Image 1 (tube, one colour):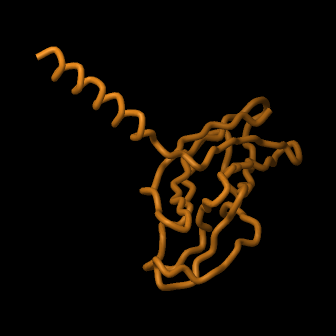
Image 2 (cartoon, rainbow, N blue to C red; image 1 turned 30 degrees about the vertical axis):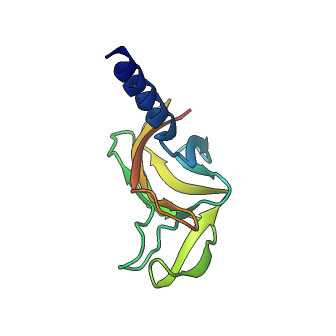
Length: 149
């Protein structure tokens, strides 16, 4: 009985060691005041080699586009939509279409108009999907909070 129990415990730890969660994208956030009444919020994705994150501009039928949802705040309003740099656009066999994506890192920028003097906190979430040449991970959502001083 002890041998069976010992084997089950060993099997459990072996399976647990191989079942580590993949997280090929790390997110960071910052803000810079550009005038007394305006600022830019920076949302940066640092992507592990071999992986990519999709653009905000993906046609229907493709992967999940990166999307930003900002929490409404009394201290700020959004100015336009989040901006992104020029993406890599290539045909992906998995989706049977051209898709736009980023490798290594990408910085998205959102302009905000400040309504109050002093420190303001901009909150929101980013939903994204990441893939490599073998597989795609399920879409993930990350909340963020950025102080604008």
